[in-house]
Length: 368
Image (cartoon, rainbow, N blue to C red):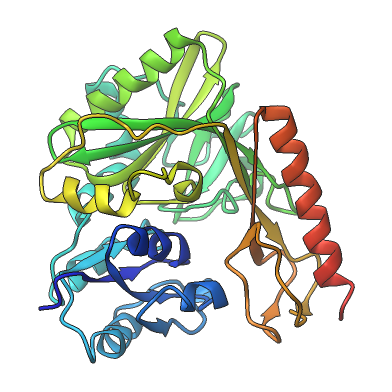
């Protein structure tokens, strides 16, 4: 067994691979994109063809595992985004090796609408009202795909009536996410970020980006941290996870739980400690005593294709990540790359990241 080789499987594996390298691990990555900066980080890679359209499947995962483990005997597998709506694949992957992270039962429990509502009730946590059937009066309700991620699946309830969707009452508030580390018994909150949407036609809640830290009054951050501790005592979360809230003045509601590392990894990666290393230790039962300190304000955002295009050949700015290879086809509305920005204040950081989004879209879309 290679003592530091770990298979990483996610829609996009770059952020996890970068953190794994910083933590002294050897990443063997399976993802949907095979971006150029990710390939520079990993020791082996397999791309899941049509992953963006079809998602993960048992057959493609088996074939990809054979590719990345051909020259290595990894410690196990770390899974990111891509399994929320198909937890049975986590059970399938467990036949290939140890899963470092939440298992299928945990994913099922937090991603099933009725089970999530029951969890909130048992933990005495407020959450938006949920209905399996579309309400007769759909005004003020949202339709969400079961196990959906990224916000692109969320629409007004009046526009959607399908068996794989459920309905959630629209409630006021600003989106805030708590990134936390768990060892199966308790949790350590690593910090809070604020998120925003990047609306597109028919996708009003598509994920746009996140900024750290969230500007929260102390009493609210204490309430959110207490909420995380309650759910961590109720469910055996393992590793890096996140909880999404809507904060409205002195009130909050728990929106959903993401039982895996996700989109905010980059902005919580601390100079002194790799999040991947913390994740692996927590999965082994060793929870860090305190959250790594993070200075300044950091933000990340997704640049989406404005129209169908082949990515041109050019020098990517150092503030970009998830960089597609020259010639890659990016369809309108698909992710083009990730953009980063850091400054001393929130307004400056948001302004800088918006400027950089405009810059990268102008540079790529001008060269057709």
